[in-house]
Image 1 (cartoon, each protein chain N blue to C red):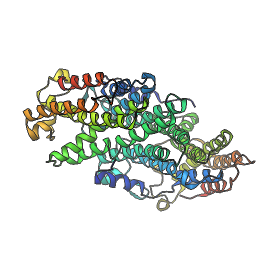
Image 2 (cartoon, helix red, strand yellow):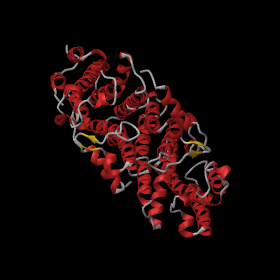
Image 3 (cartoon, rainbow over the protein chains, first blue to last red):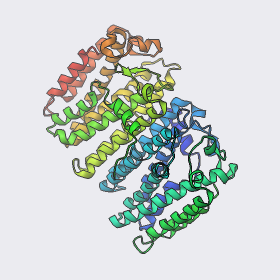
Image 4 (cartoon, rainbow over the protein chains, first blue to last red):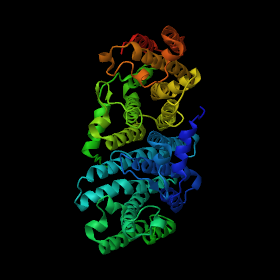
Amino acid sequence: MHWDVPAKLRESMQYSLMAGGKRLRPVFVLLAAEALGGTERAAMPAACAIEMIHTYSLVHDDLPAMDNDDYRRGKPTNHKIYGEAMAILAGDGLLTHAFHVVSDAGRQGLLSPESAIAIVAELSQLAGASGMVGGQAADVLGEQGITSREELDYIHRHKTGDLIVFSLRAGGWAAGATEAQLEALTRFGYAIGLAFQIQDDILDVEGDEQKLGKAVNSDEKQQKVTYPFLIGMAASKQKVRDLTEDAKAAIAGGVIPHPESLMALADYLVKRDH
Amino acid sequence: MHWDVPAKLRESMQYSLMAGGKRLRPVFVLLAAEALGGTERAAMPAACAIEMIHTYSLVHDDLPAMDNDDYRRGKPTNHKIYGEAMAILAGDGLLTHAFHVVSDAGRQGLLSPESAIAIVAELSQLAGASGMVGGQAADVLGEQGITSREELDYIHRHKTGDLIVFSLRAGGWAAGATEAQLEALTRFGYAIGLAFQIQDDILDVEGDEQKLGKAVNSDEKQQKVTYPFLIGMAASKQKVRDLTEDAKAAIAGGVIPHPESLMALADYLVKRDH
């Protein structure tokens, strides 16, 4: 089959996919595979897929009907350049292509059919209505009045945590992980995911606008409920440190043969200023 | 893992999924499997997946930024009831869940891992930027001036044909089809898909508003280019008849053991009045 993608649609998809960012999720996929002695070649399809899913979610979240953001990573958002219709379709196209990249790797033998199916099944659950999409829906609905830590944790877990956990597990699947290893990567992922989100909330209050590429205090202006708002700044910072130690403990002790790079990434994330 | 989908999101997804319609695509999956002697049980996950994909595409196409439709199948469109943000998310959730249903069937042993991966790979290609999403993008872009039959065929092929072809091939995969059988189902699907789309255009001009569940002449009001507009009504009707015969010929002659139900469906579609 040949791939004839309308030029404007392709351009719109590439604009957001190539807009920069930390590439945190694909890095997690590759480091998790490496931590288990797997190859980059087998881990790459899932690494690309997760970046496509992450990018699609940003394109849709930025839409006027959702967060209505004009800038993302210091550049105009997708719909500001290509219009709303093309931004919706670019998101749909990226989401759909993520599943193609992984399943095609399964057909070509880069991944075993079992690993490819496991990655598709987990990605489609964690990115879906009970995962990331559900988190975004709760966020949209909750702007009419979230009050509790429990609700905030639910949103963070599904908006950010789920995809980080998936990234780690996908790297694990690509490297032939055992159940115990997948479990350790999952615990690491949920702890580091929540730490990452709280750190984002902290940076939104204290950060440097230029480094962040978005307006400081934008959450407060939109009256979003955040950790610093709920428990205070000092307690939020302590929470980030505690979660980072929990994360490192989950992959220590021998269950993961080479956990050093993952631990270093955890330390980097807690110290970042953007 | 447990499934905690926010109630409003679940309601919005179910509203459109359960809004009725012909269920044409899942019927194609089930009949293709039956035509090859396969089981309904193995074909059902792909049948559900294709209906979710079809429904998500309608929800997104109806959005104000796209076709801006207030009614679909005689009911208010998703965003008229749940708002634009929830309609975008409901579409995203349905699209993502389609891949989950098939991959999960592969993990549970309802489908072989190879068949599940093939179905995910084909669905993600045909529904994506080089398939259905590409067709919708071309449609959006083309409203600024399509003129040729070639462009119109490209749009019809990708907006409607691709998913019908997928449905037939997915039923084939679920029933363990040979290459020659998949090829015959593909030829049947592209012919019947184009016939179906032209018949839709004809009904848009001549049909009964109440049976259609949408406004007659809505394409003309939106100045969309259609087959009746380009080649006239009589030639359009002849084209539908010719394509239906081509479709039936593709699965005749023994390559498909039990083609009768598929042929009957082809005849039904060309004679339908809604």
